[in-house]
Amino acid sequence: MEYRNKFRSRRIACAALMLSMAWSAAARAADLLDRSIQFNVAAAQLGNALIDFSTQSGVQVAVADADVSRLKSGGVTGAYPAREALAILLRGTGLEFSRVGEKTVAIRVAAAAPAVPAVLRTSRPAATSAAAAAAPDSGGGASANSQLPDVTVMAPIPPSDQQLAGDSLYQFILHHATTHFPASDAVRGGLARWRGGRAESICPVTLGLDKGYNDFLTARLRALAAYVGAPLDADPNCRDNVRILFTTDPEKLMGEVMNWAGRTLGVRYPHQTEKTLANSGIHAIQGWYVTANGGQSVLNRDAALIGHLDLLPVWPLVTNTGLNGGGGRFAGIAGVIIVVDTTKVEGYTIGTIADYISVLVLTHVQTPDHCDPLPSILDLESSTCGAREKPTAITAGDLAFLKALYYHNTGIGPTLSRDDIQINMLRQFQGR
Amino acid sequence: MVNAQQASQGEGGSRPAHRLSAAAVDPKIAASWRDGTLQYVGEPLEHVVSDINRYSVRKIVVAPALLQSRFTGTVSTANVGEWLAALQQIFPVDVVDQHSNGILIQSRDNHGIQK
Image (cartoon, chains in turn yellow, purple):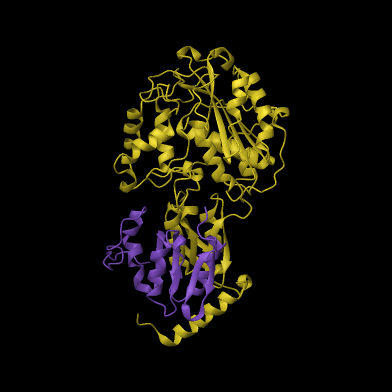
């Protein structure tokens, strides 16, 4: 409470003045940021590294925790001007700093890696070949465009005991891997996943945004799939079975999606397909899973030959037991269609959207309208999270779940039960 | 660098466990009180502002919707004006000088909670 009075009044006057100004003091005199200092910032979580940077340089640092909490830093050692050391710490993070006043920097997601613009150039998906739009290898294409975040998957901060308390993990798993259709055998085992082989290896394509964004999203999905061990089709010219479509007019797209699903994936019963696909509209990000019930023989066969495909929506408005009457064990994912209404995702960054979609693609989620104690990127579009801070990227829980889901995945293997997943996730968290 | 201090300042002890509880007991961070520079990793604004208010006669008030927004970084108690300005860069907030009623941090759209 005791503070130096003469400074206090001046400081407050200064604060008041600055509040009334537009803080345009970016171009102040030669300064702290140019001063060369011997830095010794160890590799750490980025937030901690920034604090070390601040302590050593005297530059006040401010950042929203959500923007740094999942990031790590390699640190910086040696004599550098402060601004250069900070640039090194932020390299590859998709963050940038801006000057505030004399001694302060604000760090935020780079302005050029912005929210998805409201009006996007929307291409016609049916006419675009997968090969033309297929992304280059993860990392390559996106990093060529410095405006986009890095696709590299960083290990997020592990969950707290509080987040894992009670049956938190069980609920989390329930909502991440199931089929919500009562007739299915979802309770015990047979959790749907990509099982590998030609028919069930992920070959994603993103359409409807500018090329840089399309490529980033595809590359990020590939990076996440590789990180968790999901089967990926390595061929960049592969025939796509994951189609992510951005559009300002989702309804109009449905016809094309339906045709594509029917033709490419061999989904049967087109009239029922139409009915299922009509369940769009409300949600910014809508999707459907093409699931297969083939057994082990599904490997190395075309999806069209699997014989028993089904189409299940991410957000069922109508409880549909599936096009083939349900009741089967749809243990394999053979295709995913995601339709993003660009008019409804304004304000999210492309990185956030990419992570949300990637989780939808990698596991057959239950209608993602839950809010478990253990945070998930799926909370983004949940209506039940209230004022809780929404994640901006894939969470530790999501990644641990997906790793567990694909832990055994060599294409053939024991069906995974929720218990298996839970044990495996706990084992991963115990390393924290 | 302040390294060897024990986390004896008592600031962290009485608080409920936060999501980033590991940061709350980092002795280096807890010891930051000593030199008037506050350091936070993932701390709710509510706590950050309550710390700052100990140093300042002009009280800062945080709108309820923003109390749980998590801040990472440093606050120099001699430079709160710039910190408030930076806050507007990193969160969707406005900082409003209410003169005798202190300084209010509120959601930018002023319509309460946003996503």
